Image 1 (cartoon, rainbow, N blue to C red):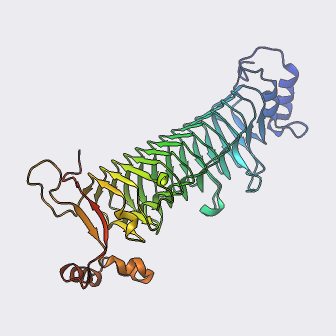
Image 2: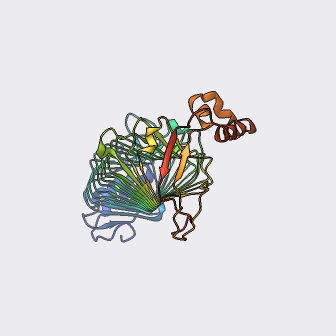
Image 3: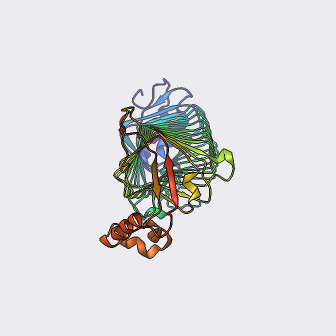
Length: 412
């Protein structure tokens, strides 16, 4: 009896039904569902190792532990496992073959409860991975999630939050899903996860107060996108090899008081894309980040600045800063950044350049204003045009930015 659960009882009839009908179910009900329903609240169910077909619903605060020997097979219909009970725990399961309907949000796991723990599970060939719906203070930890074998736009989200608050998503690995998607979901925590081969690492829409810390994003089309999500903290993440044309490691639109701190952005098409602050409170802060070997480190669009950029490192980028309007970057607060193309000196040895770092529009105006000219970036022809404009400009080139205190050393 303990093989099935840690509660004691005489459920002889139920056991006989299980042995007779096995995994085929009884009266259209999954065989495992019978034991889920029979397990008393607060107790642990450990099913016999094997594959169980059909959808499962947990309505009581039980512990379902597969001991890495149990597979739940949704048989390509609907959501595989639904958790409706506050405080339920699901661990060590393999969950496969959800339905394929986007309008039904067919998922590996659906959570419509609070205080649930889902850990150490593997989800494969599921349209949506883990879907939290009006869920509060749940923990999603150490799961491995991959979507169905379709093009990225036809996959589902690896993790999806809707109207969900204060959830902790930690140490998961999300592979080849469409996005990680938070909508109307404030104050959630996304910590120490790995996201690869996805369309968007995390997309926040109307989800203020979230913290995204210590994650690895690589080989995605885009990294983190924050849209109308205020007071978001993005700290100590690593973005690398996200080189799809016009894809950004980080992007912000219409979001106020977003903090980017201590991130590493390496070998990406665009490190950061940010719009002009519509109101003074729409400013963002970039403190102590490293932008290295990117096509464009930062791209500002709009006609005004106001953002704060202190103590960042810019090295090996094809273009440090690109703007659509000269005021988009020159009005920002630049101070203490390291620029590998700085040509000044530090005669007093205080670690700060004796003259400001200044960047101007030269030949890049051609490829920024004419898309067809992008093909020629880095060619000898444009390099010659750039040299001629620097040596003998026909007019004063527009100033892109000025850092009054450029650092001489990339290390603090």
